[in-house]
Image 1 (cartoon, rainbow, N blue to C red):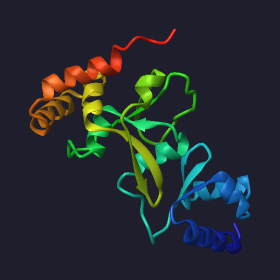
Image 2 (image 1 turned 90 degrees about the vertical axis):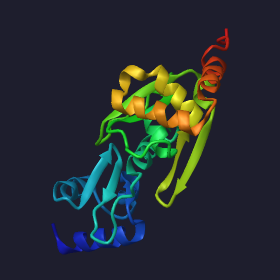
Image 3 (image 1 turned 90 degrees about the horizontal axis):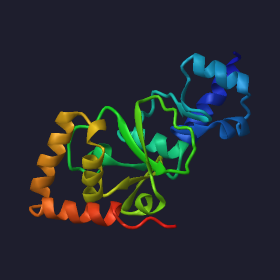
Length: 196
């Protein structure tokens, strides 16, 4: 490619400092073919369909890039279960597979560059207890600690045993009334009558 294209990429990198969508790359004057070539050359990283990370020595991806990237692909998705326990600070080790929640009716494709375990929730269960994290790269949603531990119990078979055991151990220290509170919370969240 001509040097003018590389100069344009440098300009785009300085302007956007990280994530950019195909639409914005095209607004900046790049063609689909050029985007493909720049990706092949390692100047752009394809995060998901239509979403890119601009590779530059001047900045690097944020520590919470998985949550940021999931939110860029599906703004309504919520980090849940063991992953939410990590983002909410209950555990220190990030699970290898990112757990996300979406509504049962949500059909967004969620093909990411990292492993994702997707859980589908009813409307009521999906809406409860979301916290919003705002970052310079965009915002994302995470369920609170009580809700997330409850979800971990519900999805125990999808979580590595050592992570599950650690979450339960940490939660008992976090909340001395953990068992009673967890049971009451689970009953409230998952056993309410379904709408007819």
